[in-house]
Length: 479
Image: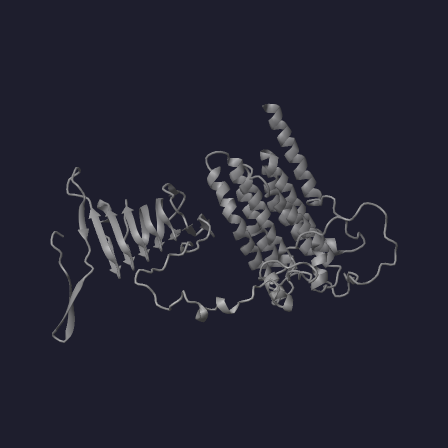
């Protein structure tokens, strides 16, 4: 046990020494020109400081974990090394046009695709680690910003938005390993710090308006595709197939007109082809016309009924969701027949939004700011405490149980709502509008007493008295 610990410490020390002496070294990447002064540019030195301050933490913890986490961390290291090389080359290169910009950024795109490839195939036990790292690399695409009309957010905003994509999986790591392995928790926290504040502050200090290209450097102009090659084609194996679409490509490639069309494109192509489109149609003869048929009278019999169509009408729903978005909002959508939904890692700053759920039960264990149930059917919600309000909107057959406190409960445009209040929540203010069959159940006076059910009125009497209307609810017998 002691020998393994010593080996890990020696590996970590040697790694720190190599990083501090020369920054993070690129893996198999071409070296930049040594006769240029760009590497000593302050922005390049600041990039080395970024890696030495933030990436080292990710790398050291990845060495402790090993396996796929270490593998994806090495790809992460390679991507940042490629970005450093590109920043150095930008100091030596004139700003290219859009076509040549994609070619210039191709090395970075290839590393990002390598990270995405690790998340494909059979899902591993470390899928959240792989996905968090792969999604976070889209933040490095800030280097492709070329102006307000390029279709991207400003570099600082792009880094923040890209990390939001990865934070969902990063939060899953924190929840899963919170009480299992502190190394994984430390890796997730270090990964976030690499981007926020690490990369974001670096971009903010050095490239807030995008990369600064050289005005006197060399140009990156690729030869036109139609130009014939002067050199004879080399013999050897066939070249590899073209890579998939680039992350930095602004336009999708147009399909060749010589290729066969699919779907509706094929239909329109056949329609516009001319006379051949009617070649397979049958000719309508005189005896087939309705006016010449003796078996058709035009009178509909009393017993004739329209048969229902075989295709049942249903509303298309999206995929089921139960996720925390941007660290602020729990989204529960399109859950059908799920009786064991649980949200147990929440705080008073977060809200919960349910939409399109049916025949399911959700338990919210902890205090949240707000809960909204929207367009749900036969849905059960059990919660502890809310800071602001619990809202039911556009629902049918909902049961809600409050185990703690809720200052306000509102029911709007809902048919069938059962509210179970705890002893602590009897002071709750209940607001109803355009709703029916709303019943409130409160605990009895004794510990063994049954729940007392009270139906909220849905009918009102309006009488004009003394110059204004006086509204009173209709009383129901047995209420």
